[in-house]
Length: 132
Image (cartoon, rainbow, N blue to C red; front, side, top):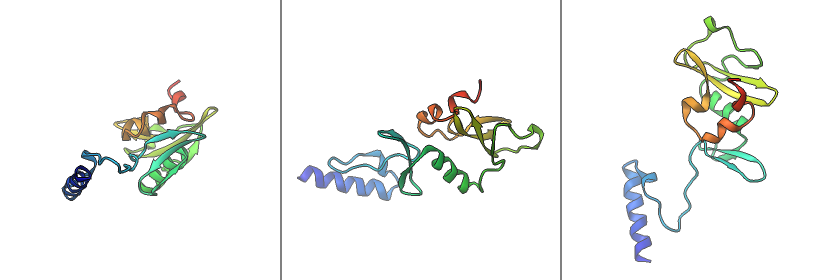
């Protein structure tokens, strides 16, 4: 019991220093990492801001909302290259499903490749096929 109390004290101290995730506390569940994917009956992503598990597509839409929405909407055809700007967002719609794209360093990239959420995002929907 004393070990648990000390671990809680250390976790509290780390939390006040902004390092709460640096030390797991035995016996206490940790909140999932923002963008973490879990696949049980369905594929879900943890949205820290919403405080809940949502579909990967909803996760992307929630992220886009924090950036002012999908700059170029949704569709099969990419926007004209000369019209896009750094940070623009576009939900490409392929036969295999949607994939959120972000214009980053002068080219379209999967948003997950820019934001580094869970690598499993790159296996969801149309993401495996965007560069084919």
